[in-house]
Length: 71
Image (cartoon, rainbow, N blue to C red):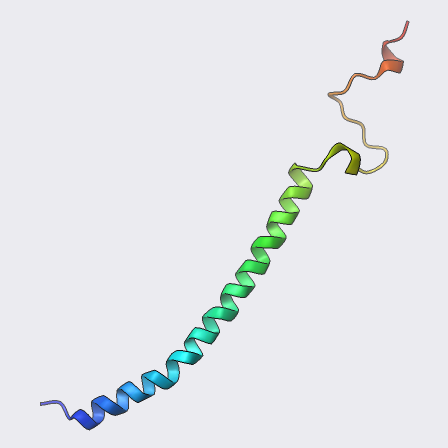
């Protein structure tokens, strides 16, 4: 038969360790969230950049340039 004193001791150890584990998971989750938000911002800049925000000197090859089409 298992000694109930040992069972209580094991449960108390687990109870002490559990908050530490939860705190570690919170920190890890926060780090993952920061990385995800950075990646989302990077993708938005790369893929969804509005025309007005393009760097100077960039030309959009899909636009019709009126100066080139005048005869």
